[in-house]
Length: 346
Image 1 (cartoon, rainbow, N blue to C red):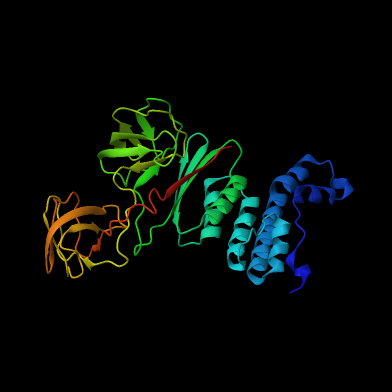
Image 2: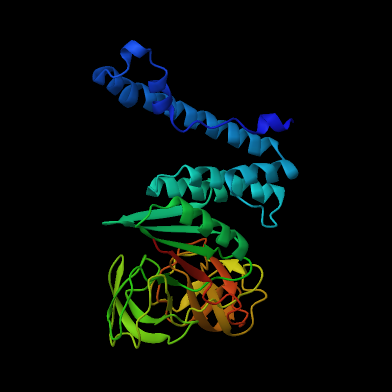
């Protein structure tokens, strides 16, 4: 692969170029200039953009090693220790970030270029100038930092972007804390909290705001709607947008490496018997976790067991047949508060 094939000079001013190429007798004609500048030039410029994008992305796919480093230098994306495979994702994201107009769709495109099409990404535009974007994926701090850098360059000036990511729970190892993130700055004694999403929170309960930081506040709450909770007593101190709000008592407890069994008959709220395929391997009493990766996951104590049944404390949630059941191993929180909230200001 030759170095010449890595780059095609980019022309950013087709409107001005086309005007200068008009014959002298046509220059200064308002109607003709309007056609060139407003009709023809935008189409040519769009073709230029598409050609550059296709050429650059093709070069990224075909390049390796120093060739990728050269491409990164041309478009402004350093390798920062990434492997070739990971660096290609960064480069694709940089190409789109450089051409971003700051729309939410552009930002999501940058994320998809880095994370892949299979990643779950949700976004909400906030009036008058803001956006909330949430992606669930397995990552490292280095990748998260690279993505934040790309989004910082891609988002529009004057727009606050709150980007939230979770290191996705590995079903055979642990589950993360339930929680959400503040979407607006708060003040002392404030009781109404605007958050990204309340779907993972029970209708009432207890939360801790900023659980792993300075001046955490623990208070009972009531869900008001999909993006609002109401505290009973209020915050002890104010916290900025992006602060994590954790459901108390759900701090990411670990559990056994493999699921123990599955539910074989639907279980309802209030049931004290959970019918399962097999209880072999479970201690005589302890805790089990039902549906650890689902919205209605539940950790419940059991006091006795039969070959195919746990005697449990009254269930607070319903569970369908086929739900996975794990034995809680009693380890606390290596991944407590695993959700992270990141904020980019204008």
